[in-house]
Length: 102
Image 1 (cartoon, rainbow, N blue to C red):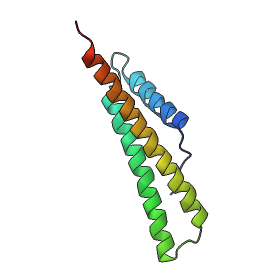
Image 2: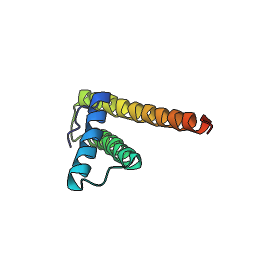
Image 3: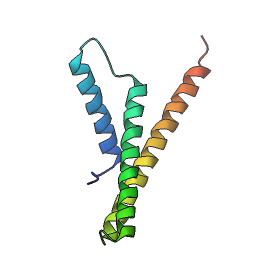
Image 4: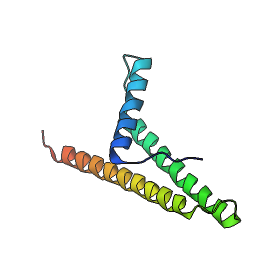
């Protein structure tokens, strides 16, 4: 299983593509932020599973490319850090909205 490059720009473009795909199917609907986050979480989970599979294959002796595991592990870590930062920003925005008095 190949792992694609992960960066903040890739995560954001993936989320925006998901939004475009959803809105093209039905022009009256939109993709809620909750669905965008679920999509991002599932992508991070898939990346972590791929790294775990790579580690198992090295442990079994099926492959000897340790550099690939190191690179994939760094990509998975970056994906997780990006997701955590998005969550933190969403919580900050929510808290700011809650502070607004009407």
